[in-house]
Image 1 (cartoon, rainbow, N blue to C red):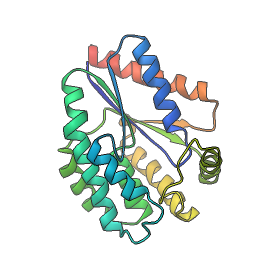
Image 2: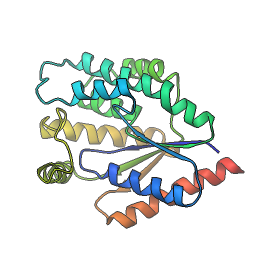
Image 3: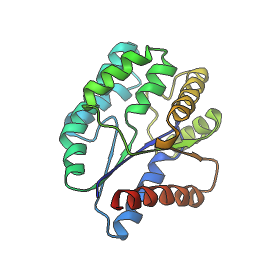
Image 4: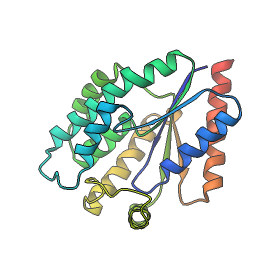
Length: 214
C-alpha cells in the first residue's frame, strides 16, 4: 500500500515538525514509513544541499540553482523514493518538485514550462499522491525561522536571506499551484496549534490510504 506524500510551505511553516509527528503516528499504527527531505536525502544529495544552502554562495545563478536542486532530486528519486514505493512503503518527503515551481518559478521568475520539463526529466515523471501545504503569512514564517535559528533549532540558509518580496512571490506561487490541481493538495492554516494541524494532515493521509486499499 504505497503512498507518496510531500510537505510544502514557506519558511517557518512547521513542515519538519508536522512530518515528524505524522511519521511517528503512522509507524505506531503499523504502517511502513520512509521519511526523507529535499535537497538531500542521499549522500550525494546532502553534498549538493551544502552548496545550495551555504550563505557564502551568493554567486549562484538562478539556472545553476535549479539544476543543482534537480540533480539532488534525481538522485533521491532513483536511490530512495522509487525503491521505497516499490516495497509498499509510505514515503514522506520534506519538499519536492512543487518547491522548484514556487521558489525558482514564481520566486526567481524562471519560465514555468521549462522548469516543469526539467523536473519531469529529473523525477522520471514521479508525482506525489498528496501535497500537504502549510500556509502562513511570510513575515510570521520568517520570524519563526529566525527565532528557531537563534535557539539552534534551525539553520539559516541562502534562500532564507532573500528579500521579503521574494518570499511573498513564493507563497503566492504555492497558492496558484494548489488552485490548478486542488485534488492533489491539502492546504492547512499553519497559524493553528500544532495538534490541530496534525489532525487535519492525519485525516487526509488516512483517507488517501483507505482509497488506495479500496
